[in-house]
Image (cartoon, rainbow, N blue to C red; front, side, top):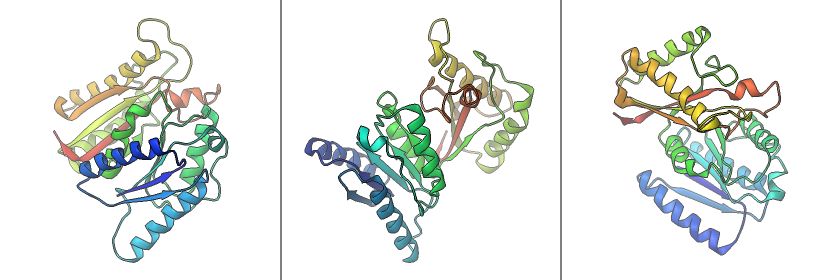
Length: 261
């Protein structure tokens, strides 16, 4: 199910969102779409979405995982006002698209949404909103998303460290025992420090993702089940301060049980 919280009322945007919603409905096998419109009050929209989720669960409709709350068209004013006092997002994926705010504002939104119960939060900037359909599909299919916190990298490096092995073995178990037919997407990221050479941060993030993928293939996972992508310094996990930059040099895996190789 998609619950679509909108932040603006421009007619052109509404028409674009309607087209977007129809496309997603088709992809989601006509799952219901609930739409709420407020002028700029994101908290109100999210509260309504949470209330709808609660009502459907009480009615026995069982919506939970597989729910996406998409917030579209956030204004710069709204981006600077972090949603507060949230609750009831109940394991859903919350997606904020075309976010115009700063890195710190992105991190503040993500932290607030997680505190409200979201299982996964994704804040896409104008430079990364090409990931929109992929994120929604993963949320609808109840994909398993995990940031491999022990699979971290040195500055400008992409080779795996010994400390990564326990988490890689856990991932291998999931793909061989729990989800033996599922595909896995491996997303590589960097911090915001410039990387010299061709491709820069984007190429470095691809190499990090590919390194994990090659490890899985070397340990028996069919190459046709594994995809590796690099997103450079987009979508930081935490603000890119000196303490935060090492955490942003990471990989995120998405196991999609609904898609078999």
